[in-house]
Image 1 (cartoon, rainbow, N blue to C red):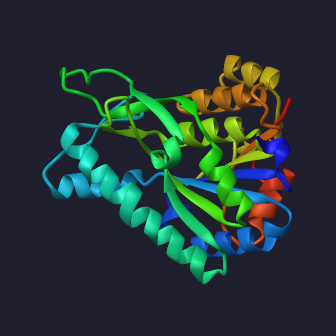
Image 2 (image 1 turned 135 degrees about the horizontal axis):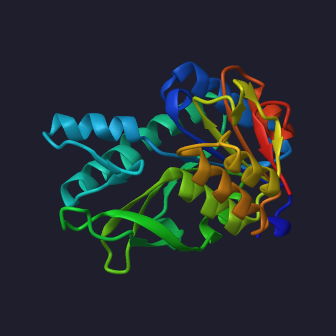
Image 3 (image 1 turned 180 degrees about the vertical axis):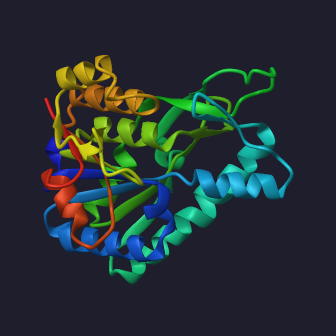
Length: 264
């Protein structure tokens, strides 16, 4: 898919403080607008903090297992409201302010993500947290062809037509693989993969396993970097993990001058 477009494709996944800060969002959108002559951008977002805030407002306590949100039927309605509604619209408004022609999408639109539930919750309830089974990126390619920037929430649907909540990192990985993106950029609160409090600027799949074995890469970072290494074997040229503070940082992340860049 990526080879058939006129420009290289960059998939950006945003989360954490950068996704919550209007100032940083405005700068990121300006970066995307200015770099739009060079790249096609697709922006994938989550919104876990906002979802948790709303679920607690309605008396539902969020439940996580190994860092993965367990989504009940009742919570799925709120996930739709936040991710497919307020969060996506907020990002579109910031894009509009920056002069970026953006279109809001979700994993449901055009059958983008075909998904299934990860299984029952430990308490036996139906779990509306899902995983991506396959991707049909045509709707995104059509946005690129029209000169638009898709901004995607990570909600989707199962084969029974019921809603599913997809981890935004997983959605971004699946999309980047399907599009054979030039680069996948993970923007969050962390400056990159750290070693002795210093950012490791470059990693390979072999280097990742060595750093995991030595204990440098631990916890939730392990599945993230392993999934990133797996994306390289599916046609993604590079994956970068880093933070975003100021306008111009996106270009630095793409070029590997900021954050941790994973290549073969």
